[in-house]
Amino acid sequence: MTVPWAPEAPPQTQPITQNDDVVRSRQQVRTFAQQCGLSLVEQTKFITAASELARNTLVYGGGGEMRAGLVERHGRRGVAAVFADSGPGIPDTDLALTDGWTSGGGLGLGLSGARRLVDEFFLDTEVDRGTTVTIVKWAR
Amino acid sequence: MTERVPVLRIGDILLVSIQVDLEDQTVLDLQEDLADQIVARSARGVVIDITAVEIVDSFVGRMLATIASISRLLDAETVVVGMRPAVAITLVELGLSLGGVRTALDLEKGLALLRRSATGAELT
Image (cartoon, rainbow over all chains, first blue to last red; front, top):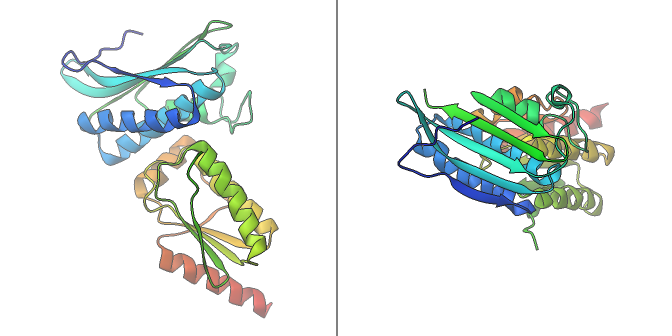
């Protein structure tokens, strides 16, 4: 998926290689979510989704990075975050998006829950190559 | 070295007020600290104040449920107080309704809840 980054503000990259990078990712996403004018509830949903995906990148992807920034499409503004790792990939995406299914010790709500919390959700994964998840939320 | 969340004691109740954006390791440390403190101080109740917490994701949500279960096994009751409306909405949509966790709107109501159930337990 080509992310329609807003031309005036380039997206920022946040490495996700250790535990406190999950906190940093949340904080960076919060700044953009506030800038594009999301309501408090919408901000909370987007930041929570980003938190789930940042942890997935670290725990299941073996580390990676997040690019986040403002997006623009047909005059609408929003916020997007792209989580990319070069980890093992996801063999069965339908299964991975099922509530309660986990390959690790989690609750199995990360991917499926994150998808419910955002407006757009793209999962691009290949076994042994890595996983990229893109989330977008538009200001109302 | 990660920060630790302080555990305060009022009578036989332990009070934890989360004021920082929680790192996963801090969450795990808190779980252990609380279990230790419940036993060391013979606590009957635990209040976790999340008034200042803007984001509760599945990891933190699971921590709240786990602390409630651990303290129940150690004969103490847990109440989570001060959840923000946006956090409640997000948690339910995420798929975590925290069924086993008692909640109260603020610290005062949380303490009252613990006192009531302590009296109730003595009567039976």
